[in-house]
Image (tube, rainbow, N blue to C red; front, top):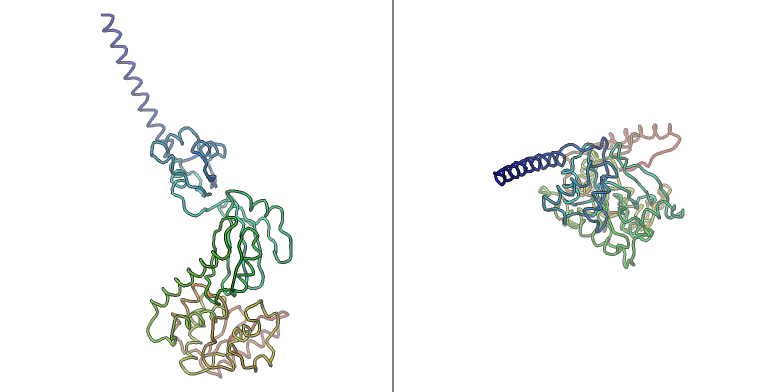
Length: 391
């Protein structure tokens, strides 16, 4: 009887323990997949080579999860303990432990944290330090400086040394290859020498994430590969009947479109003007090509064109030559390449600034002269004039 009683008690205890364990597992699963404790967006960071234990403890400390133990148990149960990906990831308010586990094991580009951006611009370069604001989920600029004129601030130098900081090179549309090469030389977190300046137009304006000590020549090669792929895809999909003998000619036109307008909605219309001129045997007569002939793409022309420069016969003076210049005059972005190969269907052959940052287009010289007269009135009323652009 005693042993029967002991066995009964043992079975009862085992059953209670099993029920308790089942309840605990169910509760743990709800905690793992249920809403998290954070009321704001969180920047979740995984250091290079960090263990699941270290990551879970950090997440608990910053209030992204309610229990480091449950997080570890859940990730381990899913078989993802060894799949942590280095980086910084933004997770929304109330993100569950499972959501966070998905983010830090899926990997991909970092989406938050500190970043240092070296911007290669048309008129000047700049270096910017930005941090994510968890309240808004948006990056906010902390420090900015001109590397050609100023010493790097301590905050930027310190950020460049952070193992989880993102380093980026941002190349603006319309910069020349010489400007890109000179800009990369100023980027002190990069290394390596650059030989010849890549062909004009052959580099894709974009943002590139790099590692500390990244090779400049390798980055230029990546830019070239990306631009070649963009041009090839757009050329393959082009409509019939465009007046280009080769993809290179389309790239030349794209560079002209890029330099003539910064208004996205105008690109196809501007492209149509120059396509119409080519088809009608008219000269392109565009100032940016003449400017490129003066500067050689090395810097900008901080003044208006002189009459002597407009009258001088050079390969880039489209007031004096027929057809396209021999090379692109800058590195056009994807949108400008698309516009050059997909121009709007118009009868426009003239355009001029309209005072709003855009342009007024015309079919006839009479219409164009009227637009020019309106622009002259606007220009005379303004203390600082805008570049005229157009032709």
